[in-house]
Length: 189
Image 1: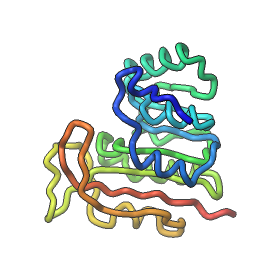
Image 2: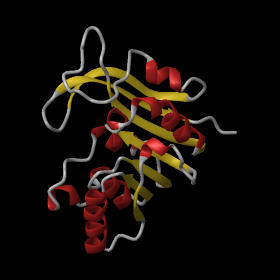
Image 3: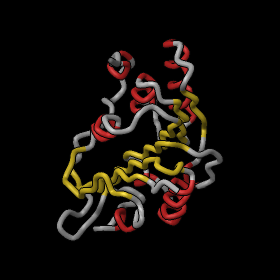
Image 4: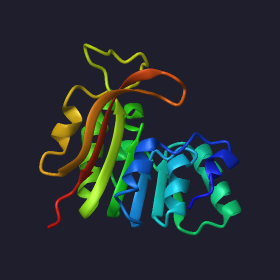
C-alpha cells in the first residue's frame, strides 16, 4: 500500500492512467518523462519501480529531490533533461509520458516518440496521454502541440495496443478537452 505523498507535499493526484497501468505492469526500470514535481514518480517509486524522472524545469527537479531526500527513497533519480532532445541513453520496461507531449516543440514530437519506442525493452510498455485538437473538439488551451484523430495509435503500429481511446477529459486545472490515451506493449523479440 502506498502513502499519499502527493497530498503530504501538496502535489496533484497521481494520474489515473498511471494507477491503471500499474495494475498490469510490475515494478521494473521506469522513466517518467515530464515528471514535474513528481506526482507520478513518487507513486511508481512506492510501488517498487526504479524510476528515472526527467523534466526541463530545474525548480521541479529540486522539489522532487527534496521530497526523495525527506522520504529516504533510493529508487528514484531525478534529472534535468530537455525531452525535445530525444536523446535517451538507457532502456526501460515502462516509459510514462502523461500530459507532456503537448508542451514540447511540435517539430520534435515524432522524434521524441521514436526515441521512447527505441528505448523501451522488448515486452516493455509506453503510456502516453496527450491533448488533441479535432474539428469536433477544438482544444481550448493553446498548447504548442496537440494530436490529431488517430495520430497516436498510428505511431504504435506493430505494438500490442493494451488501451487506446480519444475521450473527453479534464485537466487538473479544470480545463475540459479531448485526450488521446495509449498504453502499448513492445513486442518481445
